[in-house]
Amino acid sequence: MHHVFSGDTHKPKGITIFAARRRLLLMVILLAMTALVVRSVDLQVINKQFLQTQGAKRHISTIPVSTYRGKIFDRHGEIMAISSPVQSVWVNPQELDRSQIPKLEQMVQLLDLPQKKVDILNEENSKRRFAYLKRRISPELADKVKKMKISGIYFEREFKRFYPAGAMSAHLIGFTSIDDVGQEGIELAYEQSLKGQDGRKRVIRDGRRRIIEDIESIKEPVPGKDLTLSIDRRIQYLAFRELQKSFIEEQAKSASLVVLDAKTGEVLAAVTQPAFNPNSRRKLSRDIYRNRAITDVFEPGSTMKPFVVAAALDGGYVKEDAQIQTNGSYQIGRNWVRDGHNYGLLSLTKVLKKSSNVATSKISLLMPDEYLWRIYNGLGFGKSANVGFPGEAHGSLLELMKWYDFAQATLSFGYGLSTSTLQLARAYTALADDGILHSVSLLKREHDHDAKRIFKADTARKVRKMLEHVIMRGGTATRAKVSGYRVAGKTGTVKKANKGGYSKKDYFSVFVGMAPASNPRFVIAVMVDEPSKDKYYGGLIAAPVFSKVMTGTLRIYGIEPDKEGNAPKPLTK
Image 1 (cartoon, helix red, strand yellow):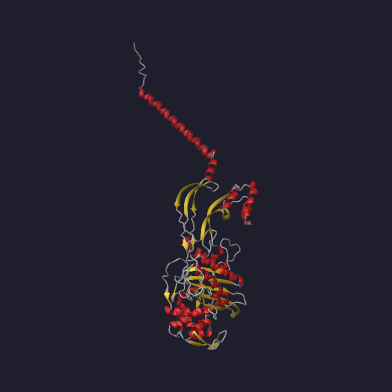
Image 2: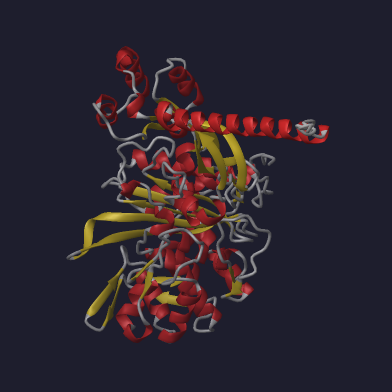
């Protein structure tokens, strides 16, 4: 009998467990793959539009981080220009809700929007996503618009320039554009240091261009550098006020005035008429913006005569006790030089006191043309004063090779050359500071390292003493007096040039003076262009303005009176 064995059907236990685990793993993998396929179909087919919308709603962008423009101060730390944070209103026309028309109309009135901005709000199917409606508005006004909660209307932080001194310093400080870029005056001259450097950062925006998250800072903003001017706001205001009064009373075409520190050459005030408000410049022509005291030129007339006398004394061409015969007229070749009166025999002091053209011409012709030309050139005539102001005038001085006797004579009493009010004031520092001509500066400084000697100290003092007589009885500028102080100065009444030669009715009225005359601290130059027709002499128009501004300046600085008699009590700083 044969036995058939089926064999042992029991497998090892370990092998059975391994097979089970493998089947489980395969099932998990299959389920995961199935889930991925399902999710892929869901994302790419079912919810494709949703994802595209979400992607469009969020994107990374790099934006500028605006910074403060540097402040401008006067010499005592008073603010002349400052930037303050403001809001700008912009619109995304694609997001405007036409059901909010009443609110939109209210916003238009509140912002006083021009028609071209209103048209943006009325655009149907606009493709644009961004447009400014009103830039740099006050925070108060921005809050009113925000409270309306109009869809599509957004706000952006910017900076707006404010000028606390207003019109009185407008021509000097200048102003910035809507983008806070210097356009005129000091703002333009020092644009590179004032403007600073904007920073940059990465942000996440939503579909409405709103920033929903800052990611990182790429570049930190660098604020603009502050600037301290030589200007004294108190003197600037005083000069502006008095010049404006004269300008209005005399119905003049324009006027300018400069106050210099006679020891340092610093510009303490520089004012111009007509004026404008830098905080509100609507409907003003560009012509009104320029600082005529620095950019405009005129023939200085008789204010040049003290330099001729100083040059002649300094070079030994005349003696201090010289007497000049005038006779009322003087022929030079085929031309004549005339005085308003026959002054007869004049001392050097009376030459200046009476302002004799004849005597000054005779004195000038005692000197070699090259010598006198070098004096004029050394005083800064015919070249820029390099004060660093945009559009600064160079003026003109006849080339030496073109000088001849009659030209030299007319140049001696201020015709045939041109200068700005600033240049003329600067030239007088050579008489005020004992022969030292100062450079001029619009920035505060302690010392003038570019000062140079033009005349001997003794010569400058002698001429200064002569110029005191111009202010005394019988002189041409009695209205330039300052109570309690000795004043030295010179008038100029200059016929204006025209196409046919010189006008018989239009004049520049000029006065330049210094005080205290014993040791001058300040030089002031005043020019009034085309004052009223019946009163145009420098001694009647410009001298009184000088007197008022010098009086206030001396008192503000507490300068000790140098004249015997009743003197005003000096004011402290």
